[in-house]
Image 1: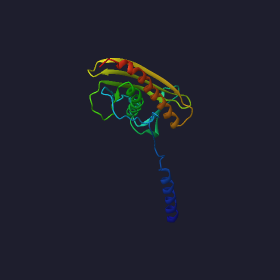
Image 2 (image 1 turned 90 degrees about the horizontal axis):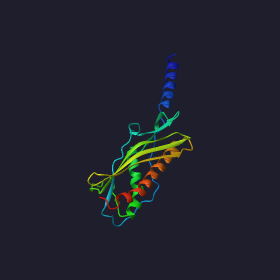
Image 3 (image 1 turned 135 degrees about the horizontal axis):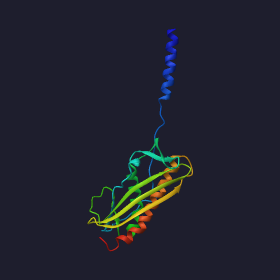
Image 4 (image 1 turned 60 degrees about the vertical axis):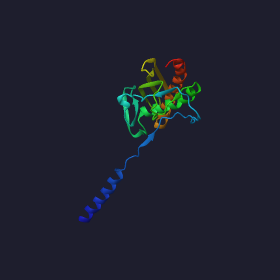
Length: 198
């Protein structure tokens, strides 16, 4: 009898140890998909992209998606951002802004550069999520200030991108494309807004 109990206990422990393994978490980055920029010299005028603010529901590592008419949120347990969402948006916007602004004589400062900026771009992310097999949505407000903290311009940017699938690869790729397009929109606006103003 004791052998049967011992045998059953071992079988039960083996089964439980197999159940204890969890799915490994997969990590994703927002990507600009741009080639690195090379420059031997940089313009003296510069712009800093400030830390991007994000809503509380996005201020987490887990990737957030929506279901049921876009009111119910799903916070993924095994799919996460490899960096805070605000950092990713800032990095992609900087990468997208750098080539066109260099061409008009404006250097986009790297995140660690503490040089006093002639212009500061603030981005307040309102929404960045999506429904599988439907669409992803980005909504943001932006403000451009000069070195004296005077507001030069403000704007709202909104975009949507189809999500053709049920995987996080597809969702995060769609979100990356929207952030890149926001950077392109800003790249078209900022040279006009900064011309002759400081």
